[in-house]
Image (tube, rainbow, N blue to C red; front, side, top):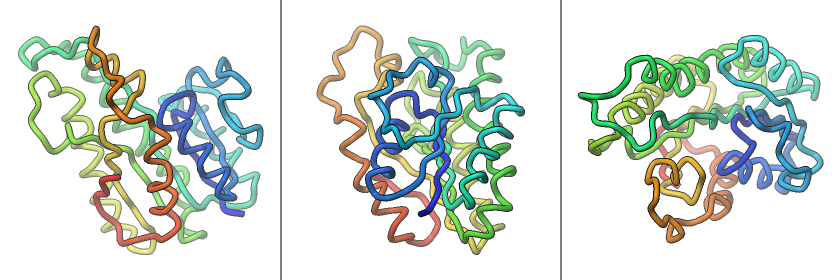
Length: 219
């Protein structure tokens, strides 16, 4: 049974992907800052929960250790992330301390976790997924901080794919979804027309099952 680490599984896309992989026969080790408060029925009982903040080195080590205890690590999904200020400010007014936090969560922490998991992933001919956004490749007013962080995460994935040719490395854009983060990006607006995260989960399972060449993927 393959094992996946999924970060940011307290809600939204991370929760949907965790559920989908469990149903597909995977072992899932999941983390999240609010995972300890996530209702028991929000995730399958089989999910191995490791609550914590992915920016914490001790937590990252505990997360990988929990996955290694299953006997193997086949997949790392770097899904945890933060939007930054809400509403999103223009770059002229973007608070730099907040920008550092956005990069820490969206770029530095995923790379740090990837570094820890790489030895096991290499043994399993595994895969690394980093969840990205169209804001990484399109210039949307007000999205400079988040978009720049996601662009950096995409390029880090691109280089990792070159450096680790025996792994699969995908940077995955799931599209606009009906999540709390998306609601925060558009405060006061109705986002009920966006699809739920569960709608893209089958395409994600197909991706990690069929294992196409490394690259950018739009679900």
